[in-house]
Structures are given as structure tokens and as C-alpha cells.
Amino acid sequence: MNAAIRAVVRTSLGRGVEVIGFHHGYEGILKDESFLMDSKSVGGIIDRGGTLLRTARSKEFRELEGRQKAVQVLHKNKIEGLVVIGGDGSLTGALALHEEFSFPVMGLPGSIDNDISGTDFSIGFDTAVNTAVEAIDRVRDTAYSHERVFVIEVMGRKNGFIAVEAGLAAGAEAILIPEVPYALLDICHQLKSSAEKGKRSSIIVVAEGAARAVDIKDFIERNTGFELRYLVLGHMQRGGTPTAFDRVLALRLGAFATNRLLSGFTGEMAGVDGTKLVSHPLSYVLSTERTIDPDRLLLAEAMAI
Ligand code: F6P
Image (tube, rainbow, N blue to C red; front, side, top):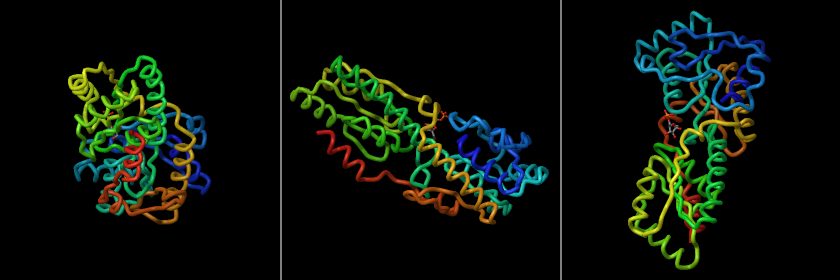
């Protein structure tokens, strides 16, 4: 997100436009946590995870009255256009500002979950996946040496994008995600038959929305007699040095969204389609569901024999 903020600020300044930042998202607008951003204010942040603007959830902004107040604060600060970076909640707020007040807005997809429609990648996903893969690789050393089965839980409350990508890249023997029903007994049979063929270690990747790693571990132990270990990666996937892919993606999206906003476009979210930059109406983005590529699931299955 920091790379995106850097791109928004420097693209605007390059076009002679002043930039005001708000700390703590919509909550920060309501509390008027505004500050002037110059080029230096976004220096030295491209390699930092998280967001220098901080973030917050805002109950007040979810109500029409709250949004009316927010628009007043924006007008008071002479804000003529707003760039919002975030997931579902942030983009829904941006759409409300656009539809209810015709306030000029542009959205940027920021979510490690990669569940935002209208873009192949959202900012943070690649870093989260690489972090998960590195952790799984490390665990595999123990799994191999100690001949054990490990269950590793990755983030993804409602979807399995991180689980599928990290599971594929780390060579997981099974990937469990909320979108696809699974039979744990089948996995137990698979583990037993692999063990009979001489395979003594396996990694099962589970998205947090599919099940808790500890429950999967207990079930498999009860039904196979094997001794398992489990690990919950949790919030470590949300931070750390962003990958080069994420930084460049964020820079491109940030600059593109800013240029579109300054050219009079509004109510859209910038995204990528393959290598191309695209922009879709927020109403489309928020009413369309992004689904897991079935070919990836087939590939994972084909690799798990
Ligand atoms: O929505 C993004 C996400 O990272 C989910 O994958 C995860 O379940 C959730 O956020 C964690 O949110 P919190 O930090 O509020 O617990």
C-alpha cells in the first residue's frame, strides 16, 4: 500500500496538484486527521509493509449521517477528489461517496486475499503468498526429516486464493479452501496409501475459512494413527517487505488511478488484466464475485498423486 500512496502523491505533485492525506481511513476523515503530503513525506516507504497512513474500521461512516459529515470534512479541506485503497469495505465506502454525493473517487484494490473483482491481482497478495510459501518451505524441512504430516493454515476468511497459490508453489499434497467441499476421510486414505508407497511426509494447506488447522490435524490423527503437527501463519502474511511484483503493481495502479481521477473519471477502480492496466466501475467491481481459476485446482489435484 505504501508504494501505491507514493505513486498517488508523486503523480499528483508532478501534475501540479496538492495532496492531502488522511490517517485512519474513513474514521480519519470523520475526525479530520488530514495533513499535507509533499514528495518527501512518501520517501523511504516503498520497501515497507502496512500503510504509513494507518487504517481503521469506521462504524460511523457506514451510516448515511456519517458519510454526510465526511463529505463536509472533505469540502472543508478543499478536497476535489479522493483515492481510496482497500478491500470490500473501503471500496463500498468509495462507491457510496460517488453515488450519494457525486464526490469524485477512484479505488485501488488493496487486499492480501485477492478476492476483488476487476483485477487479476490486488496489492499485497503476491507478498502474502510469497511469505506463506517461504514459511511452508521451512516447515517442509522438518516434515521431511521427521517424516511427519503438517497442516498449515493460511489467511482467507471467505476464499482460498492464498491457499491455492501458496499450496501450488510449495508443492502441498492437499489444499483445502472454503469454495470447494472436501472429504477429510479421502485425505486420510490418500495419506495412508502414500505412506504405504514410501512417502513419509506431507503438507496440507488449509485456508482459515475452510477449517481450523488444529481440527484437521485432530481428525487425521484419529483416522490414520499418524502423529501430525499444525501451524497457523496468521498475521505474518499481512506484513514484511513487499515483493518487487507488489511494489511495481502498486506504483502502476496508483499512478494510473490518479491520472484518471485528474482527467475527470470517477466511481471506478483501477486494476490489471494480464499486463494491461484497466479501470472498471466500482458498481461492477462490488457486484461481481471473483472466483478461483478451476485449472489451478485441477493442477493441484494432478500434482498430489
Ligand atoms: O480480509 C483480509 C484478511 O487478511 C483475511 O484473510 C483475514 O481473515 C482477515 O483479514 C484478518 O483480519 P483481522 O486482522 O481484522 O483479524
